[in-house]
Picture 1 (cartoon, helix red, strand yellow):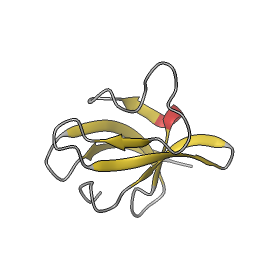
Picture 2 (tube, helix red, strand yellow):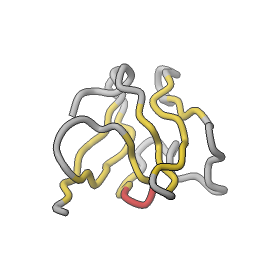
Picture 3 (cartoon, rainbow, N blue to C red):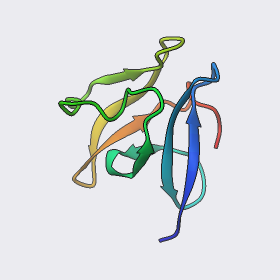
Length: 86
């Protein structure tokens, strides 16, 4: 599958990450291994984030994602109301 790099931003304009997205359409989930650059330092942390942990924008405090397991891999399920459309 062909992947393209996209910039993920909060509605407030804060740059969150650069992600290698596959397919067309909305950004529903972000697999952690496909995150190229974590601008805000909120996705790729040590130790890894626990399940069901909410991830918030460091600028405005809105919840942008929740950590889940999707297809056996850790992913951030995105809050569509908190991120800019792709």
